[in-house]
Amino acid sequence: MFNFFYNSNIFIWIERVINFINSIFFALLLVALSFALIFSPPDYLQGDSVRIMYIHVPAAWIGLASFTCIALLSILNFIFKVKNFKLISKSIAPIGLMFTCIALVTGSIWGQPTWGTFWAWDARITSMLILALFYFLFILTQKLISDEDKANKISSIIAAVGFINIPIIKYSVEWWNTLHQPASIKITGTSTIHASMLMPLLLMFLVLILYCALIFLMKYKTEIIRIKKNNLKRL
Amino acid sequence: MLPKKVKKRAALLTAILFSSLIAIFIILKTLSSNILYFKSPTDIKNSQDNSINKKIRVGGMVKKNSLIISGAEIKFTITDFKNEIRVSYSGTVPNLFSEEKGVVAEGKLQDKKYFIADRILAKHDENYMPPELKEIIKKNVK
Image 1 (cartoon, rainbow over the protein chains, first blue to last red):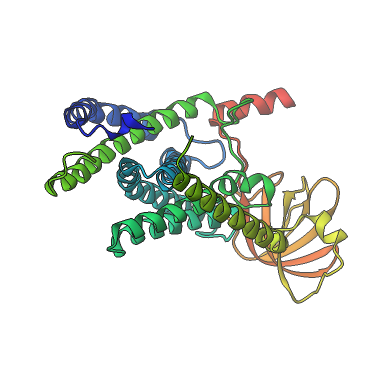
Image 2: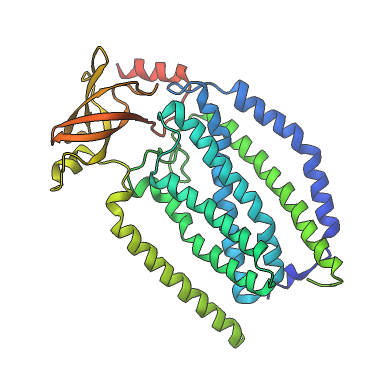
């Protein structure tokens, strides 16, 4: 099972993808940032502080998505002992933690002028903070526990338990009264965000996803090199 | 057929996940009233425990034409379109605070219909649009 993932001869492919992303990344970043910061209109109510959203929302999405990936890979890894999944989730974790922190920080910078407070212990914000803690625990167990098998087991369980938090974050704004507004972009039904603002948001999301891919591949490469250094031919 | 070890690990993980799911559900259930960031005027009307000296938050819409500013004191009505509550506050309000917009007031109840706030937070809704569009919508509604 999962034999495809055992292939450790993917070095060349990683290099190629990194080079490709590098060649388009800065051009795309420039386009997306100029749309987000200059060409998109200000909001009718918040004025220019709406521009914080173009970082905040993609960062939060990426924070949630990476933890979902980590949790699913960890569950598979825990049950089927696929060592490569451990490397992948280990490489994703710092990116997810960084973007979760970015979402929290930009959110509170946005909250001060709009809500009138930097921080509110409402369900959405608190559950997002718990997500950051789960990331932190996940990374810490792998760093601090020297016995690799044990670290792997414990971090997998942490990721699996933290997975329960993901739907709580998503639906917190619908289940409880929160200061945080409900989702503007819906998978089904019409979005309550105007097209002229949705476009730069999706562009920024694309750019940040590319950035994640870049960092992930570099991190993943180092993890493989580390294993190769220990004279292991296969993962 | 899966090996026995794999099955054992799967069962273990399912057990851990299931028990933590139940634990979290129970915790959220018991804390449910504390998780609510604010109470609506209807919640306050229906609740038995309205202790005057307890700090609570009330949230809803600022009712149209209810905002009165006299010197440093601001008075307005929070409504959830079923019940309402009169709020008195003195201090600064966030930029987004205005009539027919969401608001959360932090303070103490005087009685079921009167609330003295010591902090006002504006609640932003999920609508984002450029100012020109808002003008068009305003014109069409009128």
